[in-house]
Image (cartoon, rainbow, N blue to C red; front, side, top):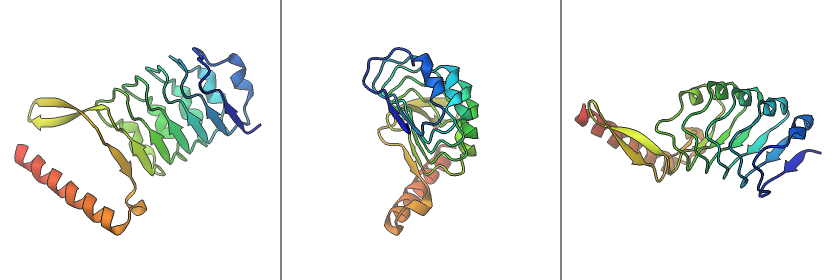
Length: 174
């Protein structure tokens, strides 16, 4: 068995037997009532895709960083405020979905993910610097990052123009 779909099952806890599925490459647990992940999730080191969207997760175990073959990790629609630093160990991660959580800043561990191509932080209360010493929370309707190499020339030009506008505004406030 390569894939295990336990989505939409009203699960409050991941069954203990999950640790025995060491060869699965896709695990779909979206739309349950999960409040935590067991540390045994780290045993599933063959995983390439993990979907944990639409649960009730408030934190993640550091053992998630043991899933070094992971390419896709979806964590949207939870109640996360931070990621464990071990997420930086996911050297193969290409897509990370963090939309509709409670992040106030972009997690610093993401800087270690050199293969990350897409990051979705839509609808998080990201903090922005308004004036020196004052921070203002802004719900990000759209905050989606992609590698420049994946953009067409027109989109890249548009992004660079917007970045310059933001930098000029930042200089104004400092």
